[in-house]
Image (cartoon, rainbow, N blue to C red; front, side):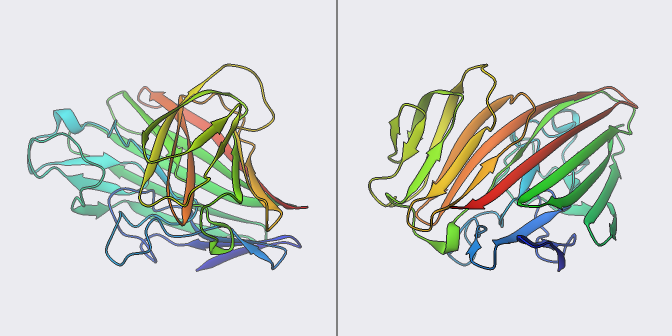
Length: 287
């Protein structure tokens, strides 16, 4: 386990294959825990039950949850790239399913660390012309965690996909209840598909502890705001803000009784040889 630390934050980061070796989440920069002022922890597992879920934890991110590179043109038994993971084997002609555990040929990974940052590279190429090189650099600035992405299309085929951070957050492992408050400044409407949540203007709350999954898609407006979302715990008087500044493709919200996961998506379209850079920035605070 790698650790980045300053006078406010301690961030624990798993190297590729150290904690997670599944086919869904990006293996680079797998942030398993963030501790603020030696007092508040923020990261929890996707599921608490052994063997349940897909192995996510903390600030897990995923590329191509519904747009994997080249899946539709990959024959059964052949491989397609999953950015940040490697090459996955297509078992049949069914639609791609991010819940399914595909056989993985890991990407080529490199890890380097300085006193103030951690950088991970991943590269893979499939036989049908798709390829990627991903560089993720994680650094700290006072009370902020900064994740910088550089993605290059190293193949012969243009691709469109997306990326989001799942953000498995549960402060000090506190149960999700009336103490949690999620503020989404750009929210017009919370379209709840599963479970029960309460929307009041730009805020989401849980008057009753969830008895299973909750999930919603969020209708967002185009106004400029200083953050995408803020999750605050009234009893702990602590919270986290997503200060990411790119224009989101879309936003969703998932969780259970132990976790709240706001998900902000970015759209990606790259021709061969093209590179895209973006950044995710989180601020952790107490008051």
